[in-house]
Image (tube, rainbow, N blue to C red; front, side, top):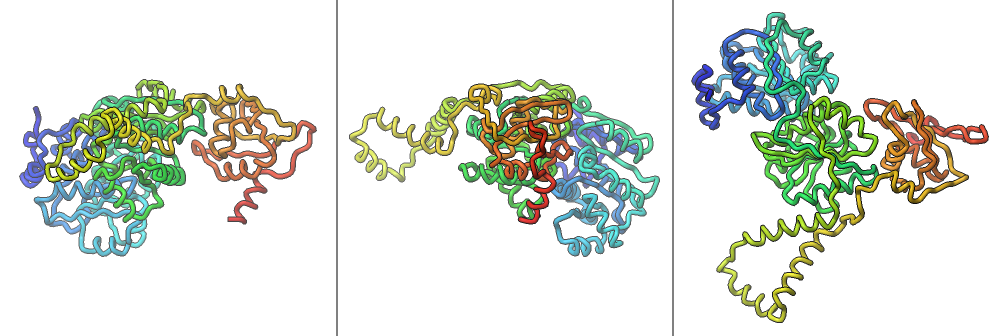
Length: 552
């Protein structure tokens, strides 16, 4: 068994690791250190989230720097401020026995003047987000002309977030002979292109297989309708009384809305997204790490840098555009050798994405039935019985026991148990839906067909080429507008577009729901279609948008 002692670290770093209790390196740490401690080279390292990549590049970076040189020798670029902060804190722990080395993290959302003062005092290792680093460079507060090592952490995520051009612009100000170390969880062809453009004959190491989801995670698929998506989320949370998890949404707006609804319904939840101030984000993350929160509702971007090993579940409230992002999301659970679950809430329109996720990540999504309310009640009762039996009696409360015995003397054992169960489950059942969430949109629409001669015909720019059938279009419209599913009818899909009918009173509601809507990085638009008589009704989405923006 290889230990850190076997890898050739200098005493200051080895002592710091001993203090932290680190003995055995993870596979990516062992492979990286064996290369970077003994060679001056570029490196591409592939390893899943939660495998200790910060130590894999941080320890060799610290070992080769010279504290007597008063300029930036090491630069670590990270896609988000959370990850930037996390890396900075971990680097400081590893450098605990090297007080002469100065490490600073700079990122958006924090006071740039405070960061500027710190930089003027001298920094050896700079951890930065690309946007804030460019701001500092434009102000001539950061010089990278003597940089020795550049680390690109979570490179695939930086690419997804559109940072590639910014990274290239930053590296143009660095020496040609520097070393570049690229760390990534997945290796799409775009990352290969990035490596070819920015690096020279890099050594490649990989832990596990490329683009494969981490082992120890069970992947489950729950299919429902758009209008039942939130009710399904609650049902999945309720069936796991001890859940401690992350819920992923696509947008900041959706993240905030879902978190607020969960809080209103009695769950310990909070939102994490880019519109929060740095102080708010730190408070949310502190509450989550301390398990004062049951659920963290987050966007993909904001979730980068969540370093919590005990997350039991990841719930995909909405699926991401790219299969690689699913890998990152699900990698928040099943860490440090533990088991975890990745749960997908999907509609029929998500089937194409699910297939791509299975193929790209080489996993199987187990399609499961959404549990009924009776099963949820039994799960909560079982958990309550277990915890009830573990409560020890307190001798100091003897006088109260006596009062309780006298007050409940007229009740039988069965009566007391019945009252306790009623109390527990009545409290739990508040604001919980009792209908079958597995009912599909097609079953509902066929059971109560509805026709309206006075309905307006709407056209939407998604169709069969986008994997939308008539049921998926109906789910999309209902989910966005919250109009009753039976009030959207006569749905027809074609290759490039689809048509549906709704009553005239829903026109403004439909246009408002589709205003500035983006799905899969594409603008989704709705307009009024030509009527059966060949006349085009007045009004369209463009004119409505002008009116809608004026109102706002």
